[in-house]
View 1 (cartoon, rainbow, N blue to C red):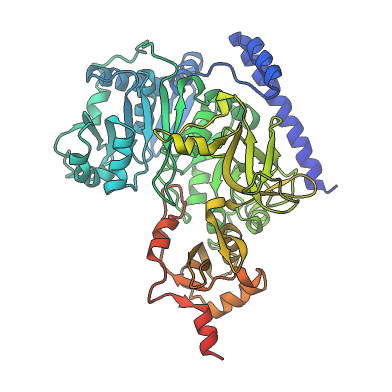
View 2 (cartoon, helix red, strand yellow):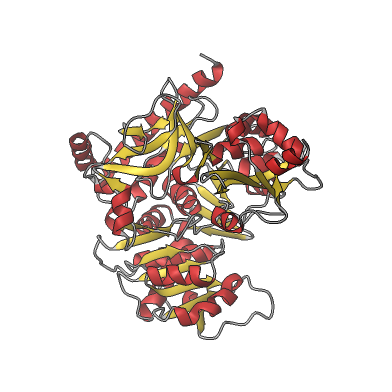
Length: 575
């Protein structure tokens, strides 16, 4: 056994002993240890007692340790008491405006403390939050506002023009509230909108409202990215908010000495839950950046004294392709949680930046299933499901696939409501997600002979080429290794043969030009012939969501254009 695995098994043993101790201690203090143990034994899987809300957690932590520094943003620093008090003021202001339990509140704001004030405030009122991607516009934005029945809508100056364009399509919204604290000089409050600053007026009490509400009410609706179609709203209810499960992850990973950095948007679960909520559970701090910038990233890490951060798929390769810097290892980061990092990038990333990269797997609509690879599995693996999760890797007929073959990951949920998934107003999608007690993740995973799992892409992202199934994720993992490529997207376009032709759109590194025939030769050495892209587009940037997911639906709609390079046509002309 190599030294990396020996060290990682020690890490795993330490982490699990710590989480068991902390969870037992906290549940004993709350008087809920007995019910948790009884349900866990009955179901033969970890069972969480009745959940708490995100604002319950804030109030609990503010009462216990209100002076603890919690949030740093630009030149602002807030402790837990200040965060709680300002959230209370916003809650009182909303109540004065007629807000009631069970109503929806949209938050379409870029990263700032005011996002969090609004988020916690509406939870104190028993309302439900709809965090919204700041890049949405037009009919797509109006769809989410109407579909989720938003009554109050928070937005900032950066999206004010888009909001004005859809006002006549969203008549059910009672009040639009604009945050203009970071707006440029001369910015005027949009007609018919209220100033967010009014909600923080000292005339509103800084104390909790003490509102009672139905715990079966919706708590949050998190919309999927909608990269392949209309977004679906994943419903979380107060009774099963997921807050306690996040607490278990926090106890596993963090201590009060940690500073969790995030440049990911607060409207996304990664920043709002995995960073902010888990930092609150752990008694740690959050360093909040406005957005991801590859050129400024490590300077922000050093300035914030961060000890950890989360890294989504494309971020690691992009950071690796930045020019080497003598300060690359000059930071306080002790580990990174990564999701969908290309296997070939993991080890070079660790060596260049002097960090431990722990690969994880989970999803907003994944039923709470989490895997970890803290070095106890090969590079590229997502580890194994935690907490005795019962799972299978299956084909379209629900038959188990062979070792090293990709199959859809399905999780046994049975009647466990904590782990079930509900889509808003979409019983068909909910039924397809949950079938005969099995939760269908839609993710293709393979398992090696030792039982370690590997992410192979979304089932919806697979292509059929010359009778073979091709994973876009695996092709992308090779394209990104070409030295002149900064980032890429791979997807299928209609073929004259009735299947798919493979197309890739690539962004070159700054100042470099891509030799397309050479790129094809490079890929031919690493991929089967049928998986080498036929069509290649070179662009300045890819269309993305704020969470850095490529919007492939846009690229597919564009399809093959006059500027697209056709490998097969080029090869034919050279014969």
